[in-house]
Image 1: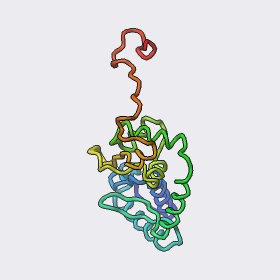
Image 2: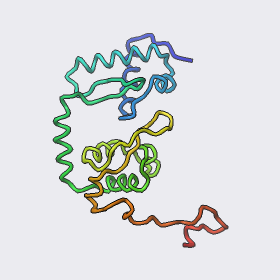
Image 3: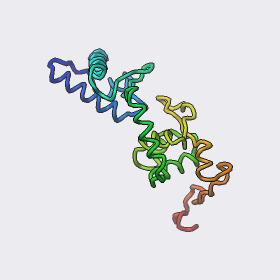
Image 4: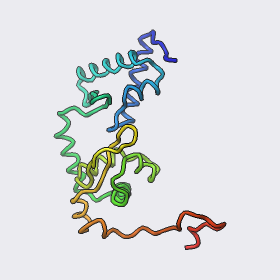
Length: 193
């Protein structure tokens, strides 16, 4: 059952929750259905709060805005931020890759095309910001959308990745070790190799 909103404090609380959820969702954004099921408020209440947040960000000297594409709501940086973001990411480009960047790149190279959620399941930690940085450096790119619910973006490495690692093709990547055929016979196959 959906809760009914009565006070200004409750409305402010709903906006804060929306803001936090949209921030956590990152590039994937959230649909109205996601928000209704997560927050237990009716669609009208959430729509009103989203509209208020959108107006608030538009009127503020804030670097973010709330927008929606189709049925998906997202927090985005405002257009005037793009020149600074380009400068930031070009500075990052001159640095060597971190261990976490190499992990994400490796997973994408071996498993592509792959979604952010699948990468995070393998790594065990979030990688939204790392994906943005690797895209800004031109090492990975979006490769369409998955057929999974929510149609998340798929990622693959780019020719710049091959250049950076001096590979002619992904076939030159080292072969991953094989740990048995998936069946067990009393002893763990991993330790019998």
